[in-house]
Image 1 (cartoon, protein in one colour):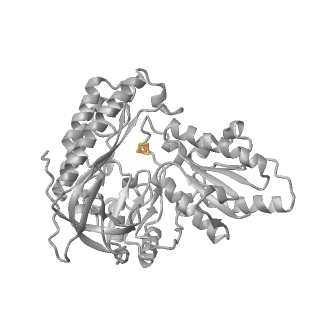
Image 2: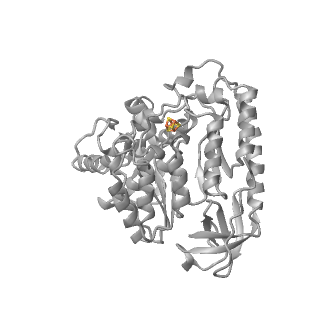
Image 3: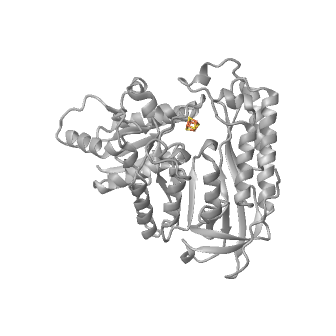
Length: 463
Ligand code: SF4
């Protein structure tokens, strides 16, 4: 009775946490299975960022509770952000859950499961659920294990930092993930070296606010931030060909980070730069410490370092008090930056955040119409930028077979997905691909002869 399935909701951080928990459980003798129908232990790693995400996870847990009632050996656990946010209160709605484990206790899951199974096997009644949502010093250092699969892993996520001290007024993350805590740089570099030795070619450094990496506990003031110094060390690792990171904060994009793009070629021509709104009034209400003009300055600075730089972003529409004029400023900012891609969210009330009690909540139909209008602007821009790449030769890091298994897929330096024909042995290689077709989010092409001139067209937008 040791087959575990972990179902993950939410962001890349949650995916990474689930992978680390799975690796720890496998090392402890558990089997990780791909289908939830085949498992003895179901762990739901949850997201709290919007109310809809929580309701989805609660609905799933309620559905699985009936299985738990039918099968006394079955184990049902809730992990992650919703477990942290709601704690033991979840048991009011989900009394059959065995395990509720918060974001600083992932590494304790193997012990909790061992104890639970031992008690059941010994016939000892387990009357109450295990609920662990406390703060644990050093917990940021525990998300480090990776799963080894049957095929070659080309890209990997590496957690460098947990929590956030920024207190944006709409955001529940400081409550679910705690204060900013960074891992030691040496541990991160060692993890990246081990990944490189296993064949990983691209690492994405992960955290709630990666650009603040080390600012609380590492030496400052010699011209480069701890985050840039970390990028330099990862850049020096043989075998690692590309470095990405998410999520940063505009506040962290100072001259040293722009210079890093000039000096460190393994950083691709892509930056995810969350803006949230193009209106200074809304940014102030969100407690975002930058203006529209400062944001555009950062975009210009990064395009100065890499003329072909592509941008993606996060945007909230319908924040309390957002007027038609505020929204118009967001729309025009999208046109000015000319994003490759954006995650657009309709504002959603999160209980316990300052924005939840702000006056002038925007009606749902207005939020929806602004959402649709912005998505259309972004879709048209993405398609235009994709089509501009047709006829160019792009350097593609081959990740493996595409969804059909018939072709290969990989990404350009600017993080665009590319699908093309080629042999599977190219996984992990950097190859030139001539782009022949484009949709909003995917490029299609053919392998170009070795040595074909790689072209990265200059950004068509001048700011
Ligand atoms: S910086 Fe990001 S994670 Fe931190 S409070 Fe703001 S939105 Fe949330």
